[in-house]
Length: 81
Image 1: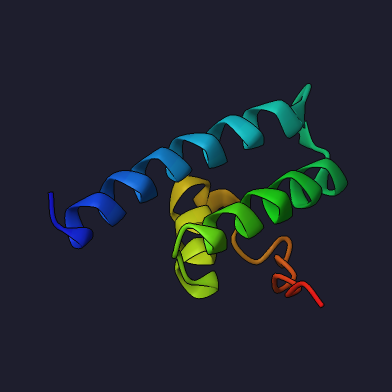
Image 2: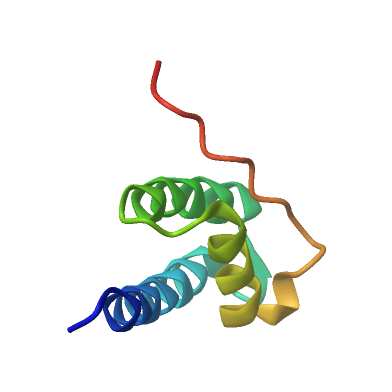
């Protein structure tokens, strides 16, 4: 398997995890943005460690949950000191 195919499979897995995080943060028709942002920030850090660029991750989030675009911002991943 080449690197590009592998990265596409990893991205698909992250898309599924993003969707699951959104479902967990949605409560009776409203979204807990604090919970959503915290969980996505952790996932974004993990994705960065696997070679997914921050901009690509953000695009994946808004692709998986388009209704959230413009309603919250994902902070950049902080690099370890």
